Image 1 (cartoon, rainbow, N blue to C red):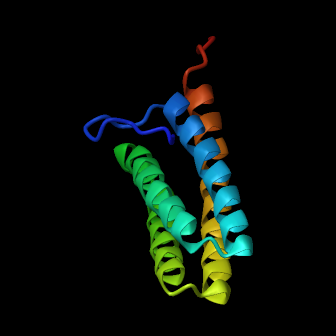
Image 2: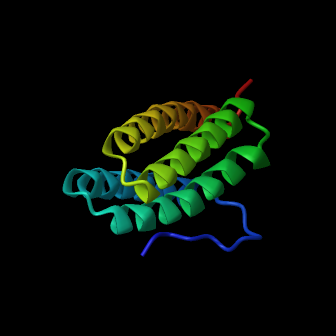
Length: 128
């Protein structure tokens, strides 16, 4: 069962980390389902990925971090493409969509590490 934050709640840093892990696991499932041509299961994976990525996008929107919002938005496009490929049982397009999704997820992870470093630095005490 995927981690789902209440619609009105914006994910916290801890939620964000759990969401990223859940996306990683679900992408792994999706790749297995593509390999096995389990198109119905792949469709379920895309439903889960959409919900998770919308929550990740909300995380970036709350701090108005444009690159995070842009990569999340592009990841959602890749998820829609993956869903369409699943419905059409198109192995090649499904694999391409997963690769695009993974590229945007890698960029999101990099931003997350940078964002965490900035947050930690901003919380350090100032000594004069």
